[in-house]
Structures are given as C-alpha cells and as structure tokens.
Length: 487
Image 1 (cartoon, one colour):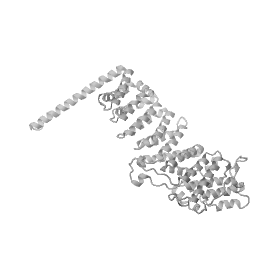
Image 2 (image 1 turned 60 degrees about the vertical axis):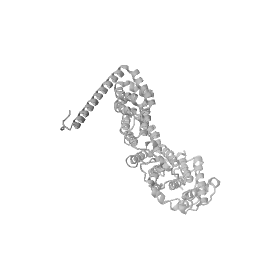
Image 3 (image 1 turned 30 degrees about the vertical axis):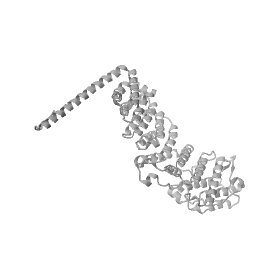
Image 4 (image 1 turned 45 degrees about the vertical axis):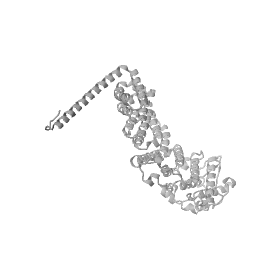
C-alpha cells in the first residue's frame, strides 16, 4: 500500500484513485495487467525500434466495453484505470479501415476518457498509474516512421515542396495520445519529482526523434509538448538544448533534410528569449556553431522565418554579437540563389535594427561591398530588397554616421544602375538613394563623383590601349611578317 501511494500530498483536495482493499489488491494489479513490462520505463523508450518491439504483450489484452471511471466506486477505479490503459496500449492496423472497427472505437473512447480525466483534475493518479499511463503513451507514439518521400524517389536535391505530404493513418488515436501526454505534462497535479522518473532523458530523446515525422499535425503537438517539458522539468533543460544542437549538426553536415526543423527553431526562439544576460559562453557557441551554419542549406526558406527570429534574439540580448552574426551571414551568402539572397537581405535588416554604431563599424566594409553587388543584381527583386534598406531610419542613421566609408563603396554600383539597369523601378529607387546621399553630404558626393569619373577615364584609356594592341597584332598577322613582340 505504501508503495502505491508514495509521493502523494497529505490532505489534497482531488479524490485519489486507490487500489481495492485487501492483501491481494496490489499484487493483482502489478502482476496481472497487460501493459506492465518487466523492463523499467527508462529502458522501455530507449530507441524507437525497441519501443515498437515491446508492444507485443499488450496485444494480448482483451478489448471490451468497460464502465466509465466516474460510474464505479472509488475502491474499484484503480483496477479499472489500469485496465483502460492496458487496452489503449494495443496497436491497430489503420491501413485497413474495415479491420477491428469495434475495438478501435473502444480504444478511442477510452483515450478520450483518460484525456478528460487528466484535464479536469478531478482525480489524482498515484505513481504506479502515472507510470502505466506514460508507458502506454510510449507504446503508441514511439514507432518507426515511414521513409521520407525523397528517400523513396532518391531525389535528395529535389524541392521538399514537391514531395507528397504524408499523413499518419492512425492519427484518430495518435492525436488523443498526444493530447493525453500534453494534459499530463501541463497539469498542476503532475508532480515533477515523480513524473521525471518516467519522462526522463530517454523519453525526451525519443520525442525529439519524432520531429522527423512528415505529418505537420504530429510535429505541432510535439512542439507544444517539448516546450512544456522544457518549461516544467528544469533538470532536462541542458539535455534538451544539447540534443537539439546535435540534430542541427546532423542536418548541417549530413542530411540537409529534416521536416521538423522549423518547429525546433520555434522552441529555441522561446528558449533564447528567456536567456539571462550576460549570456553564457555555451549559448554564444551554439549561435556560432549551429544557428549561423543553418544558413548554408539550399532550402532555407522552409525554416528561415524561425531561424531569423532566433538570430535576432541573440543580437537583441547582446548587441556585441552583431558583428559575429553579420560576418557569419556574409560567409554563407548564396551565389546563384536569388530567393535566398532576398531572405538574407531581410534578415540583415532585422539584425542591423539591433546593431549599435561600434559593432556596425567593425563590419560595414564587407557588408556594403555585398550590398553594392546586390544593388547591381540583374534580378530586380534582389536589387529592390537591397535598396529598400534606405527606408529604414536606423540603418540610414548608421550609414549617415559612416558616409565617408560607405558612399565610396556604393557610388559605383548606384551610378551603374542609373546608367543601365533594365528595370525602371530599380532606376527610380536608385535615384532616390543617390539623392539621399547628396542631401547627407554634397561635398563628399562631388568628391566621389570626381573619383568615379577619373577611374572611368583610366579604365577607358586602358581599353583603348588594349584595342590598339590587338589592331597591331592583326596587322602583323595579316602582313605575314615574322613574329614581333608588341609592348
């Protein structure tokens, strides 16, 4: 008896589901119910394949209609609860919709009842019941995921948007299992000291593995549950961060494919938002080694919004990281992908919004050399996005403070656009930027203009000399004379 009610608070208001009285009650429960395994829960969920292999014993449980928990005496609820959990641990084939329809419906109703029980908080579960419920949840959700679409076709470099979306056929049951887990985690009746014995590192690691699911409904539940676990179980926080870090490493250096990257970054965005200042060195290393290299992936557009938020949060927390972030983005700048260039320009604008003058001065030369090339891009959307920076008052202020360095870098690209860009809208935007520089410092603009004209004259003179040399060579060749060295 003491073992069963261990960890319960004295005088708690919710009614407690107790085992039946008598010397044989506890032994019947712990030996005869089908969902119990001789293997500890920590090992039960060590890997997905092992979790699936251990579902054999619940399959022998008889699926039958049982009364509602609220309709039976308190003394009988413990056994009935365990029986319902045992039936919910049985897995069904959902690819055949006509197979075991009655049993599937009984399981669905039992899952729904368990969800309502945990959500209402009307009855408090003891430790054994919690252990059985978490084991049942593990049986249902920790499973081998089907191969991804690109793995079936071999189109590793193909666009993920073209892949056929996979929807889990067992979702009618799986959704209720996830809902049950979520309600259990967020419930005020769930004691973390007890729950952490079942929701351990192995359990969390298996949850993270499931982010590889291609069903967006499942990933949404996983995102919410993992975020709640991170918030409630402080002991798991360093482990969760490290495990997510490892997923990113594998994505960066091996696969460049992971459907749940956006959801993981959403969780991280909330975590980063709560980092204390001054920031720990491990968090800065995570930025440099994991988050910034995520920019190199080809299909970054599927998670860029969440990634950009995480990056900006770091700069807002510690403005001295602006130089590191900007140089990191320049390092992974796309060469032939205009869509990525537009995303990078937008992200850089957000980072510059949080950048202070001292950090801006450290990276402004390579930054505006890149911006100058974007301004001259034949893709009008890239050029337009770069020129839109001058609509941002903070960025214009930084440029104005450092115009002696920035204007000489940008004068040539601006002049080139005005003289010959094919898009009229780009010509107009370039003219507006040019006018802003004149208003900032007319003398500096004139000086840059003179330098540009002198440089252009030297280039023209060099071209004329080269043309003259070629004409001399042609004349010598047509005259049939011996080879003559031309200076």
